[in-house]
Amino acid sequence: MGFFNIHGTLNYTLEYKDGDNYVNLSMGFEKTIGATLSAIDEYNFAFKDNNTKYFGNGNGYLNMGLSWVMGEGFTLGFDLRDLLNNQKWSPTTADRSIKIE
Image (cartoon, rainbow, N blue to C red; front, side, top):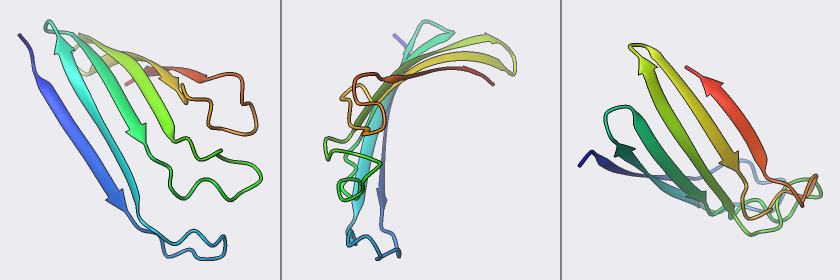
């Protein structure tokens, strides 16, 4: 059946120059599929990311990925980031990444 992990973060910045001086929140989960594969999903509300020229539109960031444990100490991951197209510098495409850990 596998494992199901839930995680969350709460943070507050001391940087006040941009006028965004409130708490930010993110949450996510990881579900193992078999012994070596995990599905990962996370959402960052990005409350502090809506007053700048370069960063977000205020939609938050939705990220999803897969992680495959190929051997002891070796993991291959594939991530899709910003699926809600929140970023302003490239608003029509999500980021993709391949990770080796």
